[in-house]
Length: 209
Ligand code: PRP
Ligand code: URA
Image 1 (tube, rainbow, N blue to C red):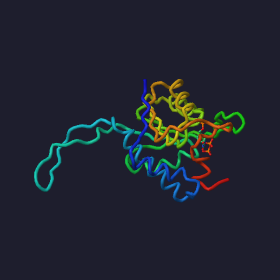
Image 2 (cartoon, rainbow, N blue to C red):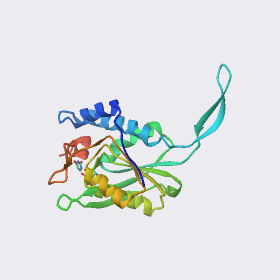
Image 3 (cartoon, rainbow, N blue to C red):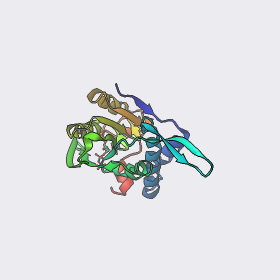
Image 4 (cartoon, rainbow, N blue to C red):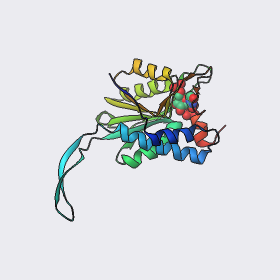
């Protein structure tokens, strides 16, 4: 069974507070999403394997460690997941990036897919699906379905804010997937928005609506 990790680090919680604030404009919102994605990546990559190596420092030889070269992939769910990609790439620059386009039908709240482009060697990569918001969980479950159908055997989900309903849905559909989040909020409102949440992540990132 995969784990759900809530990252309570003070920097994460401080930045999340700024992100939620309705007075935060798109420029700062984008910067915060990127910084939060970087901080969550630090935790989500904690189990990467290392191998032994030797480097010569100016003083002596050091027996030390490097990443053992496991291939990684970042797959944002469009649109809002895009805001997390650069922050993640700053820590794992060799990762390939795939894209899954999904939007939530405002009436049924079910995800509608409109785009998919994934790295061809996805079955050899550890995949991070990224989306700031895990609300009903419909989009995350659909995104994970897509990468698994494409051959992925190792999937992690990285989100900023989750509703309990969304976590439950992902765990029921994909019990093998580890989930990393900065906060679990109270509930979903009648329109499927996370309460208190931060509003519409895509609109706040891109200044639409
Ligand atoms: C938002 C968000 C998630 C989804 C979460 O996207 O970025 O993808 O809703 O909701 P769910 O857990 O109930 O599926 P949205 O559908 O608003 O599309 P957008 O990013 O293009 O604005
Ligand atoms: N999508 C968002 O952008 N915000 C929510 O609160 C729920 C879904």
